[in-house]
Amino acid sequence: MVIKSLLILCFFAVMVAVGLYCRKHSTDVNGFVLGGRKVGAWLTAFAYGTSYFSAVIFVGYAGQFGWIFGVSSTWIGLGNAFIGSLLAWAILGRRTRIMSQHLNAKTMPEFLGTRYDSDKLKILASAITFLFLIPYTASLFNGLSRLFEMGFHIDYAVCVIVMAVLTGVYVIAGGYMATAINDFIQGTIMLFGISAVILAVLSKHGGFMGSLAEMAKIENPVMPGVYNSFFGPAPLFLLVVVLLTSLGTWGLPQMVSKFYAIRNEGAVKKGTMISTLFAIVVAGGCYFLGGFGRLFVTQEQVDANGFDSIIPTMLSGLPDILIAIVLVLVLSASMSTLSSLVLTSSSTLMLDFIPGVSRSELSEKSKLTGMRVLIAVFILISAVIAIVQAKSRITFIAQLMGVSWGALAGSFLAPLLYGLYWKKTTKAAVGVCYAFGTMLMVIQLCVSLGLYAPSGAFAEFVFQNSLYSGVFAMLCSLVIVPVVSVLTQGTKPAATDDMFKCYDITAVVHVKTSLGDEEDA
Image (tube, rainbow, N blue to C red):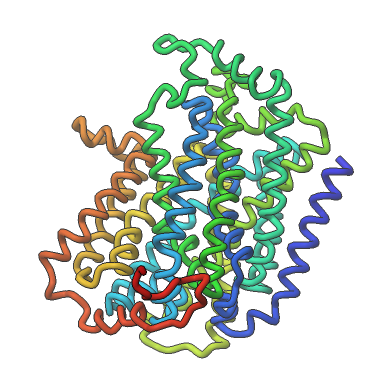
């Protein structure tokens, strides 16, 4: 207990100290929200990765999908690395950085509102962002507090309150730069922590090969040995999970905002590689670890305590020093994601929603003060929901996260992607995409709450859980936007051609970057 307490106290002290140190970078809105657009490759890549992977992944998804798919759940982590990180940086990174600066956009709603020349779209995007990030934030508290109950036997509500207060302190003090530096520290802990935990857990059954052999012995009435097979017992469902957790990041405001703040071209290239390697280790490691859950937990235990109890049970028998490392690891993952979520929510509400509704321009000081107040309000709301949710019958972290990701990615992925690459995207198409994504996930939420029962084979398939409906929302949005745009060219923003000129500016580069236009001899 002494070791665990000292590590946690040191961790908290460093986080708060970084927040206070970074106050000098958050004296204006640009510095508070984007770090002055001067954040380097390592900080940006780690901020992206730690915002991506949290207790929701480590406790919720790794436990649930490791149980369902067995060792093949590792594909989810690899999908996160190559689709959610590598492709996201390659396709969105450079263009988002260029156009967001050209449009002077600091948030996703501001970018969409300016790109499509519509204050209504900006206000709607801000409202969607704020509302659907709340359940995601609540799910972070849930996963972290389960591990703290295991390690310290502290009441759930106390864990939620302590985490909320400490995160609020360093984000309110230091803004984006504080979160970026803390994300780097937290990400380093995650890299070493997940590696140590995997080795320790697998050693209980004779290492990797011994654990695989034990997984092969687990009975499955339909497919014997399926839990250590290449694609597991449900390949289609596995694909759905990979798509939601990987492609979904392309439309999440707290993820895309990292591209607004990166320093330069070199940082984009380096950050792409760093982010991908980080995801391979952390996400791949989490899902790989969860794939061996059936060696530690019985079906009866899962029925009694839920999927969210699998990872804590796997870790409960570790030595005290490793338990301490796990607690700091998950604390790092959760606080980094939480800080990103609250900064995203408060900034879009203060910079986009309130001025848009009130039709008045606020001073720089008022915006900064307002964002800091809203950070505290957002954390308070999320903490209350987390405590209430823990006592309700909706206990699956994955369901909460799925609804949030589905609504945000279903609403924003296609408008962002086409807005960066296709001049003919229209306001009407974006509005339809907003409506479709949010309404679909509201229906899903009603289904999850038991307020609505879908009828018909197709509806039952789509709404069987938030993962299927979330992927359906994203894929449909990629079709809805171009189809509606073709039919509504009259609503295309008049200044689109001028917006895209930012990509045509000539830049002089070194020969090591480009060989030039010389013809082959």
